Image (cartoon, helix red, strand yellow):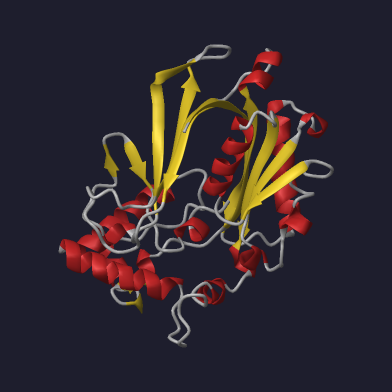
Length: 313
């Protein structure tokens, strides 16, 4: 899908293992407010809001009834994606591309510290598995890890080394929780969660929120004083199988977003500075033999519920 729209504001709520001093509504409001302030835009100028969240993890049925207002949607056209923040961005792109909307917030959040995460994920299997087999997110990831290891020949030592490298990189991320990294030997000493998956292989669950202020080409043209942060020039997604398949088969489920960075304030965006991020929903990253970065495409893999666990907020 080739499009032309712009990111003119962005805000991230600082990621924490547990945000104890704010209600979820306050987290969402503070993030949405900070996003508008970063762009110098008033809420009254917007014509719509797009939100993305999970009712079960929010602990509320139809949580948009409570969280749409903190997202800035009071008396605005509001639409919700009951999934990850990237799905919300896809939905926002289609709204701007329709020509009916021109300026709006896209907001996503997750406060997993207040939700029984594995209980929520166990309920996700209800439409498909009627026997009480106890399948939750960790067990599903463990099954996929075992299948990936069998198919690729990846050993537990190789998986531990790859996971330790990811942990070292994450510990240096200023936007992350900067958890202390552990080495491969320490990782191998952590208990099994669902063999061959160990506790040290799993990404930490965190609380956080994110907001982007998106504008159409016509809105940006009508407001020459606004300097876009990036141009969203393309977006696409596809649904793949959760079975282990060859990397070249094209059966991997992905969402791809193409952003172009302006060369300078007031300068047009150039394709030479385009980058693409692909979100894989196939199998845990440390149990795959494929390279994490290939031909300029950054892959952010996860398990069958990766869009909720790793992407929300």
